[in-house]
Amino acid sequence: MADNPSSSTDPSENLPKGMRVVRKRRKRGNRSRQTLFLKKREILREMTSEEEGGAISVKDQLSRLKSAKKAQKEDKPVDERWGDAESGQRGARILLWSLAIVVPVLAIITAFVLTRGEEGNTNAENQLNFSFNISDEKDFELIGPRAWFEENPHHSYLSSIQILERLNQSADGVVPDSVFRRENFALREIAARGIGWLSHFVTGDPRTFRWSIADTDNVGFLVLEGLREDQSTFRSYFVKSSEGIRMDWAASTAWSEVPPDKLRTVVTDRNVQIRCILEKQPHFDSQADEKRSWFLMTLPGSEEPLWGFAPAGSPLDEELLDLFHFGRFILERKDDVRVIARIGRTDAGLKENQVEILDLVTEEWVEP
Image 1 (cartoon, rainbow, N blue to C red):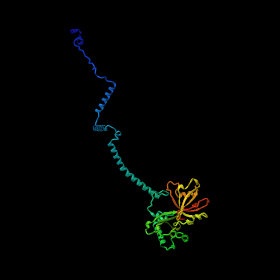
Image 2: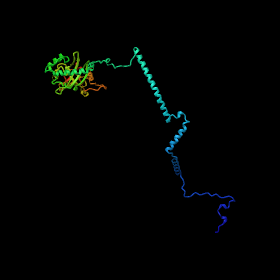
Image 3: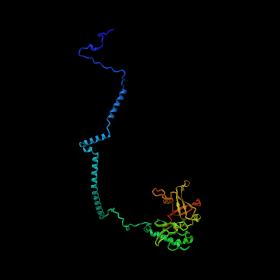
Image 4: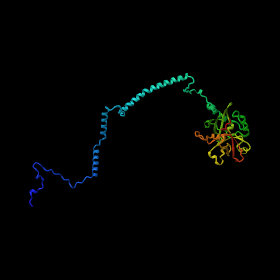
């Protein structure tokens, strides 16, 4: 069939002259439809690209900060610019200069006030004076039972060694004069029991001695420790008397009223005074015998120790425990002490090596 001009579908043919038809473009059929999820992902991608594109290098940031800071400093008030570097340095310089001026002035004023105060104290009566002056040693006087030994340590030390040398040089069985304290008592007991040692004292080198100063019951004494020629040790006591330095023979030989080998038999009949080394440990007491506080007693020259007790909680028990610093948190507890004690066997149920401590005469072996 031939083309018919009247059946043409072109709308431009029917429009008046001077007008034209605007055609709309059709969407392509193969373009995918954008969902909400895809739009959201595209938006995030665009935001990321903008941030990456807007990044500024560290050098540019520092230059911008400096320029901005310099531009604002002229217009900002002082209280808003207190933390910058220049103001901090300026403040430190002002503080140092202030201290350099104020400190010397305060020192001068303080010295002047103190000087005036000391002058006022010397003139005022019944005022406290805090200007202590102990440079003059003559005004400082030692007191107490140790005072003489502390003031004359060299003399007391050499005098003690001289007494040992005199005893070494004396003939067998002959005791030199003026060497013992309470000489009559010492000579009588020496005649009955002997001198108390079998070997001479080693006195060739005085530096080998150990010595100390102590006191008991208001009696001061010097203790000298060393060796004898048979290599046994000795511990001698020296007391200051009106005649000079003298050896306390009873303390130096640990003298007791009864010899150690006869003590167990004699103590049954009467009370005796002994010199011994007293020991105390918490495990000495037992729950089976709570009424007794037990102590270990060792007598020099005896290999068999004694067990002595005091009534638990009694004043005597407290006095004995105090020698060992029991119950004291400041002082270190002692394991053993030297004492002069009076003992007896008042209870028939005691064993042969058990006695009762009746009295504490004194600590250490020097009798008052």
